[in-house]
Amino acid sequence: MSINWFPGHMHKARKEIAEVMPQVDVIIEMLDARIPFSSENPLVPELRGDTPVIKVLNKADLADPAITELWVAHMEQEKGIKALPLTQQEPEKIKALLTLCHEMLPERNFDLRGVRAMIMGIPNVGKSTLINTLAGRIIARTGNEAGVTKSQQRIKLDNNVILTDTPGFLWPKLNPPSCGYRLAITAAIKDTVFDYADIAMFAADYFIKAYPERIKARYQITDLPETEIELLEMIARQRAFVRKGGLADLHKASEILVNEFRSGMLGRISLETPEMVSAEIILAAEEAEEKAKEKAEREEERQARARRKYAKKRQK
Image (cartoon, rainbow, N blue to C red; front, side):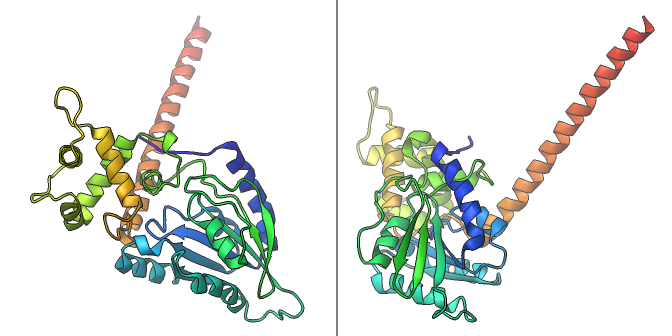
């Protein structure tokens, strides 16, 4: 199953960002520290040119700190990129972003012109809350759901920084497909778009392999099951989620697993590493190449049939 969510206002936001980005001095890209790659906006590398980027790895208190360190090192290998893990409970560190905007422009005379910054990020990544902290007042509407901000606005901040806020949006095609699952698990995609059991299966399979001890401790399991469906059945029975006929209620178990991950009750967990993502990108490219080859072969066969049919008609 492929998970995608791209409502109309996101298409409009994408066009507006592309128009404004050439006028921007610094880009602040909000990422989810649990999924730094899956939450990256493909527009940034496509359009930024030499514009410096501050990649804010938000919700770092929910992510595996060792893996977050790997992501910071990985991102800062690229010129003009600064990665900053933080949480919404660190107001002073958030406000230091304004100073960092200046540091990213060492040759700028700020007495002549301030910093034109743009902040962007996926839905429900915490962008509005961060803006309110930077401004010291309620400017952006917040909400624990995807797609709260719907239009651009400009905000004057301290340190002579003018910040353009943009709506959180995703992109029409999430690739590799695993990105869609991770975005859904972290609540970047509205719950009405996907089936809980589907994303819980994806999450359970990953947790069994990457964080077995966290799962055993949280759900009081002595022997960890080998498959994701067995884990969900164990959770259902342990929480007394049993349907008529004694069947495990997998939907309720799925909701518990996903929501307890989102809230941090499973501990600090990251859903992807740089090494994992690199392998997925290579595999996705190979699969896309194979599909393109098959499509070309089908088209060649179709044209061959058309030529044969045309030749028979001429013979008559």
